[in-house]
Image 1 (cartoon, helix red, strand yellow):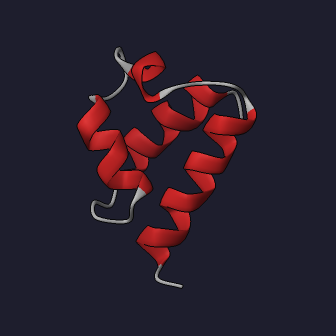
Image 2: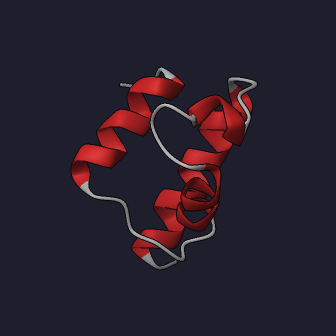
Length: 59
């Protein structure tokens, strides 16, 4: 599996496991951008990945 796709799948699984929706990330990321990351269409920067992980509670 491609790295960007694997990151996206892992983020989505962690987000859903915590019962969070894409709308819960409004202060961190736009819903469409998060969707693109989760589908492996975009690769987040390390800073953005850190922000997302912190919001999910896995950092």
